[in-house]
Length: 474
Image (cartoon, rainbow, N blue to C red; front, top):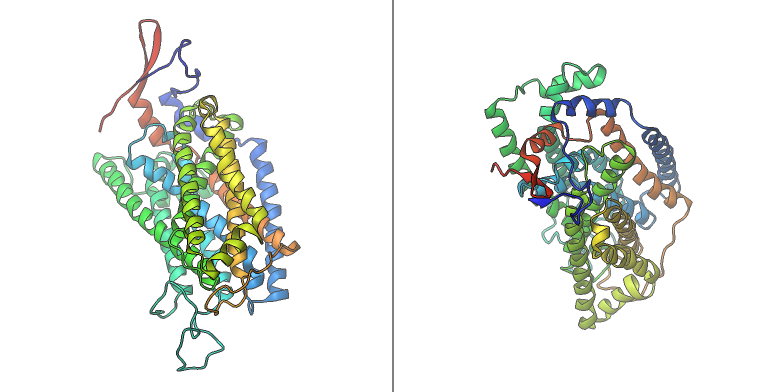
């Protein structure tokens, strides 16, 4: 239990105590009467998404898919959207398995990113045509040798590798995340299916018709969430490994690195928790959810955020030092290409945004205890993540002859044209637009989890101080 009084080092709104009987009606009213900020965001992201579609069409009409180089910025955009939105559901999964109480009011924020799994499948399809084949087209049939195929993780090159295997992985990931969202939202949909009208009412009745809230159903629901959550975690790591290996590492000849995949995954975790906190901050400050979201989720999540920031820096150092001490020509060229010469400006901006700014913000206790401190650090992390994707994937798609044995020269940087800018901004805006539409259908607060948490907590007085008393039923 933690102290909660005027003499406490914690602010008075660190923990909130929702009114249990009125939670459902209040959240439904907030969903129905959305603030003007939501409508503005919906219009802005919709317009930017249209610009992204225009940029994509013009890119196809001018360059086609005969060369993969012009698609570097599209690949970076896809990687950013996939990495962040694919990792986001893991926030709710991990902290539900570890039985954290503070995550209850913001779990649905991260789970709702499951709807973007469908968008990730659609965004990946053009990359099937843009990614070059593994077999060297300059070599005829039956010819063998080191230059006959480019080096990838697909040693035996099964049929459809890497394009269709990656697609199957992304589809499986999307289906698993949607199943988790459905299981989590079923109690809320069942509660509202008799009052919801129109499309929402039909959807709720179709997806929750079997749910009556029996003890047996609650047991199976929580057990299924745990099993699917563990499966999703394993699948997510594997699919992220495939994407960064096939669309970054294998396109730079001679790049062999065991550090990049975990660095890529940690970047996703770091960005996912940051984006969840940013949305929670907007809901708390501008959406009227301050009665459900106190400062406790930000304070608790910021510790994980700080740990991931330090872990990201460790892997970046390991990534650099391995090639630095290797001293091979291809390794030296890789360091010059990705860090010291061609993309040095983006690299240092990446490090400042994703490490230095969040680190010095999150080690300061007053900022960690606020709601805006971890959110601002999260915004910096997201910007740094975008630069990380641009540096890795644009460089990989424009490294030169991908069928060479090694990177024998340092290629120049490739800057975006107008269509690239449209594609990157429009793709991110499209993801935001889909999420906003999904938030109109499902509430951004998990009603059953908030109600359950409200039953476990109360405020009591001891001597001169008030304390939060938290039950641990499990």
